[in-house]
Structures are given as structure tokens and as C-alpha cells.
Image 1 (cartoon, rainbow, N blue to C red):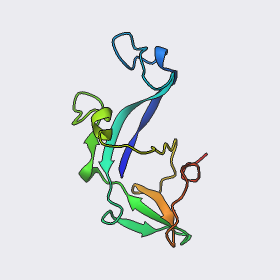
Image 2: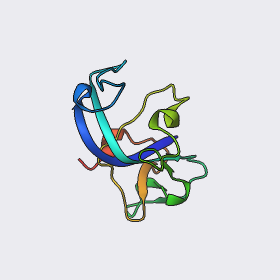
Image 3: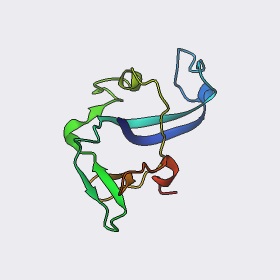
Image 4: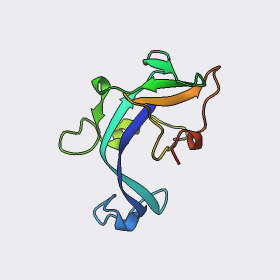
Length: 124
């Protein structure tokens, strides 16, 4: 699983975003976009990642630590976001303003195994 965290600094029409080819207006898939800064990428193996059960004992949470962080934006970027997602051929879940517990723990699934839908992993 690939996870990106960051700060949204633009949401709207791609023509106004500064994203894309020279004119900033060419996009092969759609006309709307979200631009993220301070993007960090993580390769997460749910079988090996540090995890815990939430305080209410209903949710399994996984930990995103700084030790395996790849910077995806800025001068120190290890990869571009496109390179990070290379090889992904399925759907991508986007969770804006995700729920997060102190120490970098994010909801993964219900205790018992059922995956939590993206809309229920966000704060709002």
C-alpha cells in the first residue's frame, strides 16, 4: 500500500493550478485537481507495519513514522509523486483531513478485519 501525507495548498481547476505541462493546463484525465505541498510518501506493508488497537477497542491503527519517509515535493524530493505511484493500476482512496491519533497512528480496519471505507477515516 502506498500512502501520501501533505498539506493541500490548492483545490480547483487544473488550468489555474500551475500543475502540468508548460501552460499548466494540460491534463489527460480531468479538469479538477488537488495540489499538495510537503508531500511525504510511505510504502506500507500492513502485515509488517507497527500497529495497535484504538482506545475504544474497535479500530486497528497503523503507525507512519519518519524512518521510512520519502519526500515527494521540494528540492529534497527523493521521487516525484508520479514516480511514487508508478505501477499502481487500481483505484486510489483519497482521505482529506484524516483521523489521526497522537504519535502518527492512522485507522486501518475494524477489529475483526473489515476495511474501513475512506469517508469514515476522515475527520469530517
